[in-house]
Amino acid sequence: MVETSLIFKTFVILGFQLALVFGVCLWVIIMSRKAASEKKPFFGVTFSEGTNSRGELDLQPVEVGSGLQVLTYINMASLFAMVITAHFSLVWGLVTMTTTSLTLGPVLGMIMLNMDENDGLRALQLTMLITFAAGVIGMYSGLDFSGLGIYLGFGLLGLLLLRLVMLFTDFASGQRRLIAIGGAILFTLFLLYDFNRLAALDEQGVNDWQTALQIAVSLYLDIINLLLELLEATSN
Image (cartoon, rainbow, N blue to C red):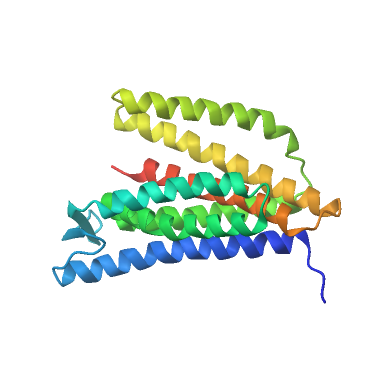
């Protein structure tokens, strides 16, 4: 049997889950456009067809059913379960991660459709580009990003507090965009930190699927949060 590295194991888990999330997201957008052209609902949502400032087709949700809200609640519960189970069970960690991906894909697709799916797809492309660059720099530059940990923790706490304040106060769109850009920078630094941590553990000879799952979950959350911040920054 050929022995595989921790990096390989992590990328197998992460790659499969990201393909699942973004594949389902793209499928939702494609099927929504098809449903709109046929004047039919999709996922309990009906759409009107319009164009954006670039002349691109831009769907606008007209009527939203309760199914999407239920799916969002399931996704949130599955996400919390994933974070918890990944630390003590490989099987349940993979199951909850897959459930998270399957439910997150439609939610992301509808978020993009609600703003402008064209901007959403561009944000997705930018997310993948940033992730690739962070992976190369974090793993192969020779730089040590391990000292970022404590600062990233405080940065995340500050971002969460800002988001909490935003729920109860009225922020102007410019302020929201600025906070989202700051969030995108924060999660880019998280990517550098976690890719660097993966490379360090691999050099130390750590090579088990449980550790690979834990790092894959961390990178998965970094990437999804980066995408959400970019969507917030590009939305109107």
